[in-house]
Amino acid sequence: MGGINPYIEQPQVQPPTKPYKLTFLPMNVTIEVDPTKIPYEHNGIPGSILDIALGSGVDIDHACGGVCACSTCHVHIKQGAETINESLEEEDDQLESAPGLTPKSRLACQCVPNGTSDVVVEIPEWNRNLVQEGH
Image (cartoon, rainbow, N blue to C red; front, side):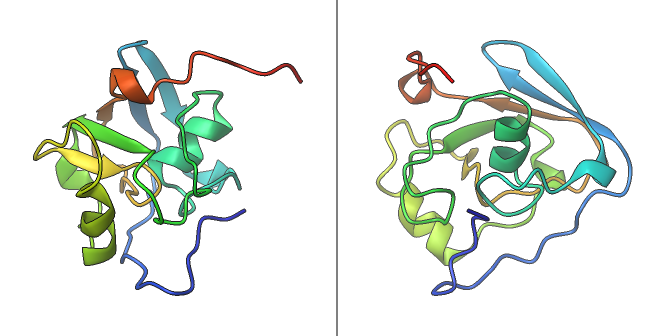
C-alpha cells in the first residue's frame, strides 16, 4: 500500500536531495535517511516519516494504511518542523480526533521532510505498539 488516498487533495512535498537524520523518541533511534532509497514502499506518502520509520524497523501504528483516514500515526515534531510540508485540511480534520493533540502534532503518513536539517519526532506513549508479531 502506497499511502495515497485518491479522494483527498495530496500535499505538495519537496523530497530530500541530501542525507539527513531522523530521530524517534523516546526510544532514541536515529536513522540516516538516504534520499536515493526513498520510497521504502511501505505506508504513507513516499518519503513520509511513516514510510521511513516502517522501512527502518520503527513501528508506528497506522490503522488506515497511511492514507490520511485516521489519526493513529499521530506524532509530535520536536525539531525540524520547518523542513516538513504544510498540513492540509484533510490532515487537520483527522488530527482533531487524536488524543494528546499539541501545536506540533502531525500525521506521520502525511509529512515529508525536505532534508535541509535533521528531524526529531516523538511517538506518543499511547501510540507505541509494544506487541510485535513473529515473522
